[in-house]
Every structure is written in structure tokens, then in C-alpha cells.
Length: 404
View 1 (cartoon, rainbow, N blue to C red):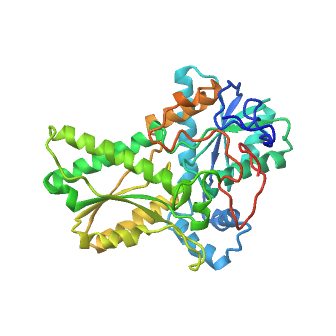
View 2 (view 1 turned 180 degrees about the vertical axis):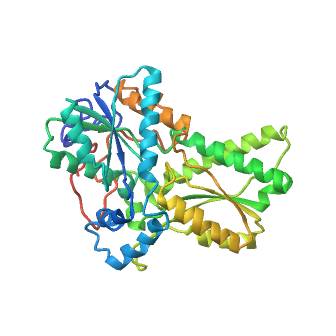
View 3 (view 1 turned 90 degrees about the horizontal axis):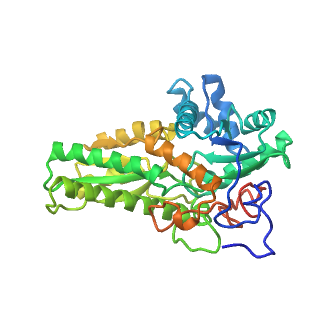
């Protein structure tokens, strides 16, 4: 669907995307891929400066930063995220080479070196003028989409490359098969393990699957996604997660049925839960918290819990600390066996899917032909006006979307 002549153009985009179509179906020649990461500290001295970068403009007191810093210091001050992005960059390069696609991969972070600006400096030095960005975040919200787009704009500003370099961005890929398949495999493997331990009969009443994602302020969640669409409580952010969780569980139940030669079995219950809440206690955030949900499971007759880090593309600090540490402790305190499913990381399907998303834009694939495993997608190539607004910070210029 094209926008009216009164719609502002998309600044900083390729000519094909500049008109603001929801799905860009015209081919685009790209010079390189820009892998846009969150960033993380790589030593004890980096921790507090990194956290100041992350929370800049939010008025977070130093004592709160010191509290969060203990999570990083527990692991030597090193976040796993940069190393994961190095591995992902190498895997993308290998997949591109395997397919015979000549697209270099640049890498820049929002909050720690190598910064996005450094990646744009490299692009300028190498004569690249048309980039396609992959943000290492699959869902729609301010922190998981719009803030990436704002920081991309800021990096163009800081590097003085506005008008010299255009940047498009692949769509949010929450329901792309490449992202979803690793979770289906992980949950199925966990269920298979528990069936061997607990027996197939009655497994549905003794095991629960918790799909975990980062909590965000309820006000931000309600503003996630386009303003002219109603996604219900939690906005597009919650709707996307719930839709993917349903797809995962349906696929797992089908696999269970195949293993049992079609013998009926009780479905395994599941719910979407949230983690890593921060901010003032008076500010409403999405709930339930994963630890509260785990504590309630024994009273429902559960003996085991499968935790699925559905909101994460790799083992971020939130996965290593909040799930592998805190949630596992809560499960143990409540006498529950816990299995934590792996994140996509560099899973072959995930890496291949990211390349497919780039080619989707390069080749101008029609929206009707784009893979999407839920009815919510395929998501937009160009974010709609006021998409994922942050009411506290106000609008800042952002790439790959129609203003504001």
C-alpha cells in the first residue's frame, strides 16, 4: 500500500524506500550489510561507562548502575554479546560466500565499540553508498526497533554522511522461519528429554513452557507498532511474542503426535512471561515476572519448567544472569526441574534467514511471497508514522521510517 502524496518521504533511505511504502517491492542495489548490535563491555573498566551509554538521558542514578554492574562483574566485566556478534558476522560472511553473494558485512554497535559511526566511517572509506541494516532484535518496540533507527540516524549525522550514504533496514523478523525454527527445535528437544525422564503419560499436566522476553514499560508496549492498528493489551510487542509462541507450541505438539504414532496426549500448557525489569517501582511494566510465574507452578502440579528466551537472538547478559542464574535458582527453590532452550545464535536456519531477509529487499520480493509464520507478519519494511513512540523521550529523527 503506497502512501498519499501528503506523506513525508523517508529520509536517508534508498530511492525505492523513500516513498514510504509499507513493503518495498522494487529491487535495490546494496553495497554492504550493516550488522547493528546493542554492544557490551569487554572488561571491568568498561562496565560503568557502557551502562552510562545505555541509560543516557534517562536520569538513572549511579547507585542503580552499580547494582546492574554486579551482573557484568560476575562474568569478569565481559558481556557475551560482542563475541556473539563477531561469530554472527563470520557466519553471515560464510553463508553469503556459500551462495556466491558479493556483499561485505560491516558491524557497528549502539552502545559500545565498535560503534555504528565507526562502521559508517569504514563504509565511507570503502566507497559504499547504499547499506542494508540488520538490527540484532526481532520484535517491535522503542528499545528493540525505533531506538536502533534513531541511533542509525545519529550515526549518519555524526559521521557527516547524510546525503552520501543511504541505509534501509530489513523488517522485524520475529515470525520469519529462520528465527522461529531454532526455538521449535529447542522446545521439542526439551520436551523429548522430559518425556524420557517423566514418562509421556500426563506430561501435559506436569510440565509448563515459559516464553521469556524483556519486560518494557507498559506505556511503551501500548505504543509499539503502527498507531492506526489495534494489537490489544501490550501492543504489537506482546502480540508478536504471543503469536510466535503459539506457532512454536503448535509445531511441538505436532512433533509429539508423530513420535507417539498419533496417540492423543494432553497439550503442554504455556505462557508468555517477562524478565529484566528496571526503572522506578511506580512505573507499570509488562507482567508477569518470570520468577513469580515459576514460583506459582508447583501449586498447579508442575514438576518441570521449560524456559524459552523467545525475545533474544543470542545469549545476552539478560539470558546468562536473569535466566541461567536467577530463574534457575527460583526453579530449584521450588523443586522444579528446569531446562533453558538455546537462543538462535548462529543456528544455520537463523543465519540463512537473515541473508534471505537481505535478498528480499535487494530483489524487491512482493509482500505476498515473503515467509511469515504468523498472521501478524510479514512486518513492514518502512516503519509507519509514530511507530513505537517513546512518550517520555519524545520523537527523535529515525531512519527506515516515516516521520515522526
